[in-house]
Image 1: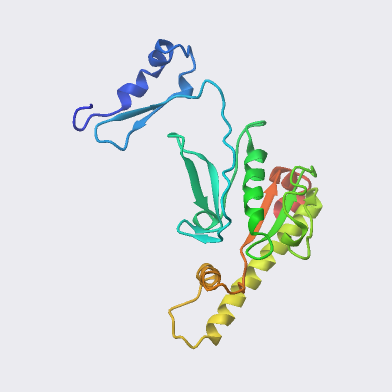
Image 2: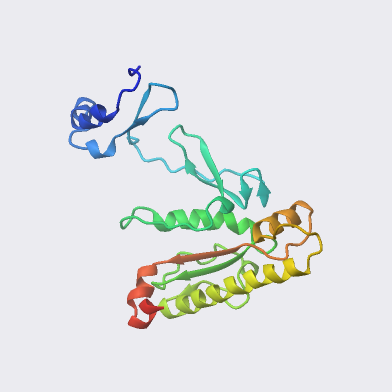
Length: 231
């Protein structure tokens, strides 16, 4: 147990010694020291000796759960428990990392799970700036937006898809505004999130479905031309 008010900085300062002491040599950068949930306790996180990739659990596709709409699994916690999150809790996600770090694998894992909601509860727009086929056949044909019924390959096709997505955002915003103006309930306001969740809970067809936009190799879109970079 740490003394009341003690800092964990001395532990971090001695990470090189700790690494050598447990046989990790000069790999101290792979050790994390943080405060534990238990008072006055330090948690030391070590990398697994053998990399373990958890499988996607089998579960019923419930579009709205206590975690929000469109729930899915994203890896595991340091305690080995499956981590459940939802699209509602992170409407925007940036995946970054070095080559071969697993960025595309993560996105494919997300897509495979969200594809379970395709058609009835979600629609998809997928673009790969480099023009590769990593995302082919992960989403059923009926899950794509009608104007882009397949993965958009290459910078020019990806750019057209993104331009449409910007216009679609404005159309959806205007749809919500018009819907509120027609409402006679006297409510404080209407949001796309509440509208979707309420209609799904009432087992009605959603007026607006979440639009899942996946863009891979974004840098290739930007560097393909000066015009694309300005856009």
